[in-house]
Image (cartoon, rainbow, N blue to C red):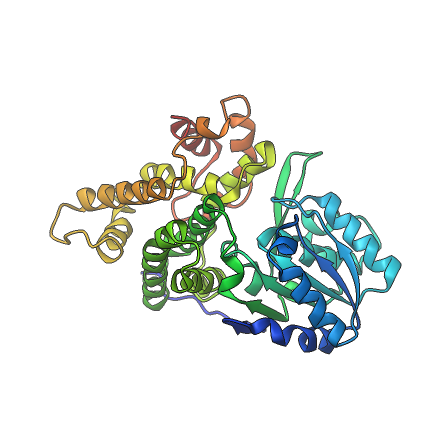
Length: 391
């Protein structure tokens, strides 16, 4: 039996959680710099008043502002390059991301690119080249990626059809403002996709071969049950503070090391979905919702069934006295049905994906350590999962 691995756990992010916590932003930014690059996506933060609240806080501390707007979902390296150049030209010394994971991920790599003399894409393909990183502060407006409390970022390069992860300790946000009311305006589809994203982060950590990581497993199950309970409520009642608050905190805890440290395993479904997003630019959580149940079905066998039984009994409340494979298959069915209840699609064809790029995507995905995942996968395995997800 594999023991719990040794690990170092450090979360240096200061979290201000709850209503009205934007009041701490000005002093938090001023603590780290006097000229901020404000990074955000579309116009939603202007329509809902968050933009004005942020600027008021910065003016109160006499922090100068340069803006990088229009950051895309699945943030592009072009936005990172633009942001890094703005930092160099304007003497920016602190990065402030206002938005969801896309804005925050972009901001993290901008923070590194601002201190790098070469092309920022180098820092994505080779994180070892990351040196100094400007301090990053975030105001979260969507619960999904957990980027507000981790050291990682994912950036897309349309020119090469790549979507890659990068990161270093210095990219971890110094301060994050988490006001659940700021997520009220998130559309239903994005709330659903965000819930699937949170659950996928938990699944990637939960399905591990480290058998004795009992604490991490129980944390994972409690967070999954939180998502299952509150994801549907948030979709149906967007202004339900309790639902938004629980989802927001679950998002942060799902990927800040609490679940993974001591129970490490290479992630499977994220590597596969990143290929979908790279080639088709689909919403990340949507791709995860499509792939996850099919990955579960594919890796279910005599050696893995025990973990699926644990999942079915502890998360979905399936009778522990039933046949193990009955429990396992029931848990997988519950997972698919839950995603469907959120209004998420079940097949790749529903999001416009056919067979044309599956083989090359499978080959690319298999290069990201899948041989070390919960159940080892190669390119042929990934291709089979893609094909099972078509219909």
